[in-house]
Length: 101
Image (tube, rainbow, N blue to C red; front, side, top):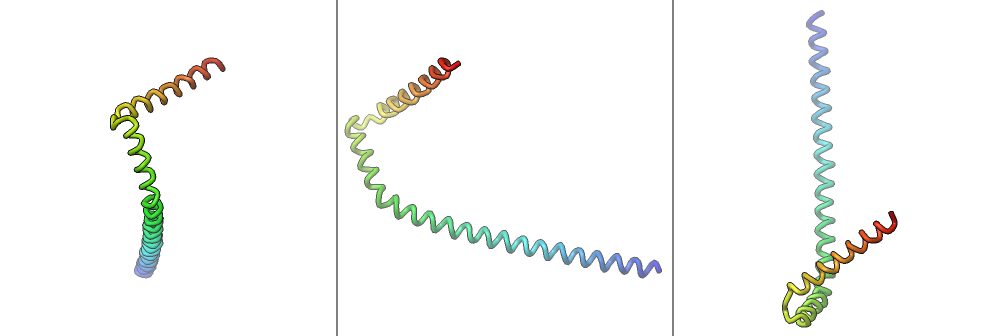
């Protein structure tokens, strides 16, 4: 009697291990396929964006060079103009908020 119970437990245990390994294989297959699909999609999107920006990149480079020529190549002036503009926007938001309160 004891031998039969031990044998049944062993069979149930091996069936459970088989289910676990099967589940792990399915999970690995699904995750691997999903990862492969995602990487292929991402490479495709990157390729298309590079083609687009490569064509219009010359335009933006020309605009940047024109702006630098206007300020005689002194990038720090552009930095301070941008920083001052951002600081004034933050100040106006604070003034508006204090007026509402």
